Image 1: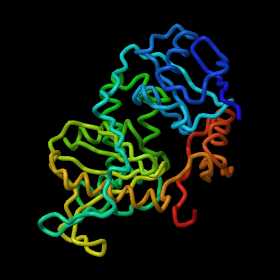
Image 2: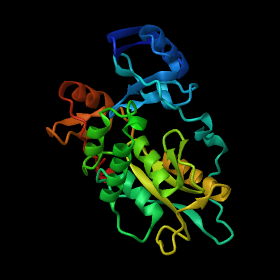
Image 3: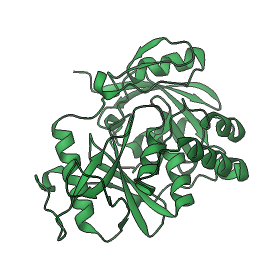
Image 4: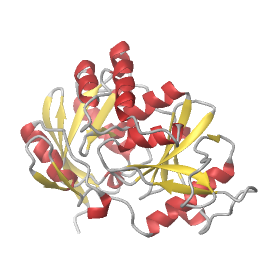
Length: 312
């Protein structure tokens, strides 16, 4: 089995080939290699991978390259941002799945943590946050998108270099109901609502924290889609749903992790290598992250459609 991979880097200096990188290499090693070839300081590196491209340089340096589904021949987009502020490592926490309980223990009121399914309509992140802020209210993704756009327009320098487009172009793009939200949107909406958002990846049980509010909400991420989390008596009841929690509420955190463990066991996550997704611009059917990235490189199309999980 081939133990190395080769990568192409699209850098400010042009296209660069990176050869013979060990598959077991950590992100820190990859960043050092890129810095050496590009003369960009490690602290200022933006390394975009996958589709849509995300900045993997923000993840812990101990992350394995393999965990980002990077394969030989992939193209990484390299940029420099001297103002880049990397989240501290205590904001990204991997939980050991073997230490998570198999079953939830109800709290003293007899309540448990419950996954609340959000429609797959390209606005799942916005609607999941909306549900957590007010479970009884109707979804209003349009308002959430406008909030994000307003923040970016009001302070473009803060977001310049963190977006794959100029701030004003990105602000216009995110207001469209076909555009997906991600890290930038969670950061802004957490600040707007004065909450902490804890998004947990079902596949690897890694948790990402955004915002510094006193109350915490939970989101479940399957690789493409976001769902909300509430605390109630059972799945069939959503009256008086609790969706905002104290940060020291360990019962809530432990309950969510049990939910994640159960979903992982059922393989209710998307492996980006094989997921099917159509382009909303030209309607070409694409399969997997690699095809989507190739399509993006050829056409510049970054407008994808979220596939309903029921049809997968």
